[in-house]
Amino acid sequence: MMGTMLQSSERQPRVRVALDAALRSGPSHAYLFRGPRGAGKREMARGFAAEILAGAADDAEDARRRALMDPSPHPDLVWLAPKGAQHMVEEVRERVIRASAYRPYEGGKRVFVIEAAEAMRDESQNALLKTLEEPPQFVHLILLSSEPSALLETIASRCQPVDFAPLPPEAVEAALREEGGGGEAEEIAAAARLSAGDLELARQLLGEQGRKLRGKVEGFAAAVLADGDAAVSWRAMLKTAEGAGEEAEAAAREVLEGEKEAGMKRSARDIADAAKRAGRRRRTELLDLGLRLAAAWFRDLAAVAAGAADLAHNSDRLDALREQAADLGARAGANGAPDALAAPRRAVELVEDTRRRLDLNVSEELALEALSFRLAAALR
Image (cartoon, rainbow, N blue to C red; front, side, top):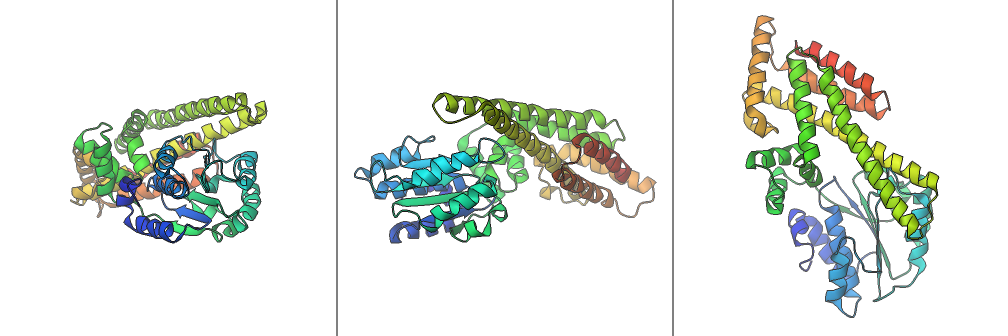
């Protein structure tokens, strides 16, 4: 697909073949790029949109260059990303549904990309349905979704699906090394494994916030394993998530207020609500990530205890894992336990159960406190 998506397409060769074929035969009016976060959907969508616009432009290279910029100044590329937990209904109506009726400003095509399409409310999805059913010939829509099951069936069925596979750890590690974002070789390898194919998450784990969260999680695991005061550790995890939420809320408010000043309709209440949703979303995401990292730690502990350290995701923390595994083995022998692996396996189950409970909007403080007690009991 020309050179524009080379880096992402090398990681998703099947997607590249499908999109190359679409460009040759004439792209469909609507696509649904579906697959896990960090699999390259955003990069591939930008490159695909650039090729569609370039193919209908008098100056293909200039159209491609501007479309590939992020943010793009190309007037016929509309890129919609949620400002908070959800897309605002009016924004979907104004920037996609109504705007799609206007002819291209230059060239012969217009492309609309809706990032995190699952974040559209049902009202927005139903309103978008007519545009998907009867779009102008010059309009192409690309929906990106990491949770396609959250889309209405009527929406998904009217889009041509393009499936993205999770990236293997080797591909994530290679991408991180190419980017040169920092981190020792062992830490980069661990971030790639812990990300489960999510390149964005791997980048986050190598950042200041990700490193801080990993440290809090390891402290939490060490405290429950040593029958210590885990409250300090789980409160630190929660405080890290709260801080991330406050930063996200402030950033979203700044963006929304800037759009209001630029002329977009925004009431003070709309801005406040959207900013709070962004903050809650980020707080929830980071807390869930903390629990995922905790589950990975106990899973690694079981692997190391079984003599399979090469399977550990926290490959940069093997010394700590071996020390904890030895303590667990000694404790199991002293207690006459037949299987030293049962305790860390049970710990993984308890952490995953807490993640499910938090999805039901239970109190975060109570859920984490209960988890610390349940883990301490299971690991004794």
